[in-house]
Amino acid sequence: MAVIKRMPRYYRHLAELLRNDVDRISSKELSGKIGFTASQIRQDFNNFGGFGQQGYGYNVRELFNETGKILGLDKSYKTVIVGAGNIGQAIANYTRFDKFGFDLQAIFDANPKLIGLKIRDVEIRDIDTLDAFMEENAVDIGIICVPTTVAQATVDRLVKSGVKGIWNFAPMDITVPKDVAMESVHLSDSLLTLVYLMNDKAKEREKKEKKSTSK
Amino acid sequence: MAVIKRMPRYYRHLAELLRNDVDRISSKELSGKIGFTASQIRQDFNNFGGFGQQGYGYNVRELFNETGKILGLDKSYKTVIVGAGNIGQAIANYTRFDKFGFDLQAIFDANPKLIGLKIRDVEIRDIDTLDAFMEENAVDIGIICVPTTVAQATVDRLVKSGVKGIWNFAPMDITVPKDVAMESVHLSDSLLTLVYLMNDKAKEREKKEKKSTSK
DNA sequence: TAGATTGTTAATCGATTAACAATC
DNA sequence: TAGATTGTTAATCGATTAACAATC
Image 1 (tube, helix red, strand yellow):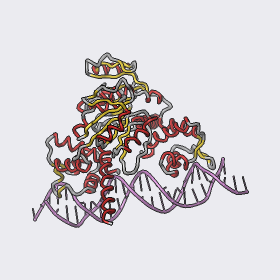
Image 2 (image 1 turned 90 degrees about the vertical axis):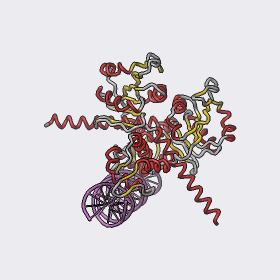
Image 3 (image 1 turned 60 degrees about the vertical axis):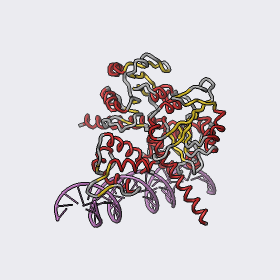
């Protein structure tokens, strides 16, 4: 699990190397760029098969492609967003995901003012039509942008409709059957972590100042 | 670090217990609710001092307050958002953070169409006025919602202005001086992780099916 | 006092790093 | 062949879990 959390970061950096026309890289060079140790980089990629060559390093394009395959980016995925509030709209507008092969099929909301509107050619539909829509369309991923109170119920509905992945933005811990994948983006958890780190660093600063004053 | 990543989750669950008028809880009960082992829960809180009582458990309100203090939520924080695109707007509209004590002072953007508009009473200002604004206002946290190309430069500007925390939404690895705290929300990394997990589970399913067919 | 549950130490597990032989 | 760098094994480190004495 620790390994796979690093894969998207490899993918990002390899994409950048590719854009810069770098065509080979050693684990040591990559380490300097990405911040993981060279040893860890070699270890990581070896989990999935040896993509390097002794005395040479790694071919950037090959490593990029393999990393994409490992992540599952050789396929495309149909998605729906449930909840067209702040976050739902932001995700719907975010074009970056299209390039990865994510294909937004529909957006659902309960608010009559939003129903019928389009975000980048994708219609916002009545939440009541969700189950019917899911029956007719093979959707892979459900993106949960609804309020906390209805988040679990929405997930249950989507799972029942055959979705195989849940991307959750509701600030709560969601439960899914064990054959369904789930990833949460807990914005407030991230912000609270930041604040903790800020205070931690502030304490360190104070300590240092005390030391230098007492000397 | 592993511990502090769990603190926001404790905080969230304790807040919920409080809302439900639960006033005491044992590590074992909390374990059932939150998913960490009872042993880990006791270990975690003991890092910050013993908040429990043998034979009784933990007082929910006390534990909630202490967790808040540990996270630094006994103070309030002035923030600015730089970049009023999809994500910037979504964060600006998100009221949840206000309650934690985060106080949005201003939003900055380069787009003349956006400058002058208000999101929840907070004005979108010209990015050119950023440095001047920062000089006059003691801002604690900078929220980076600008395009990747200008993300690092924006961070550098904010850090120079005395910001002590960076909350980064740009899909790249940002560098800050070591006395500044940084937390990134990498949306695409999260989505790629989800896809990996989906494929992993699909493989497991296939294996099982093969097994049951061959039997 | 007896029962419950913490705080804390020790044991285990997993992940990271170091080392080096294999080999391009 | 010599130099470079991987793949892989072994050593280290840190985090989690188990166990239990302390104590409310």
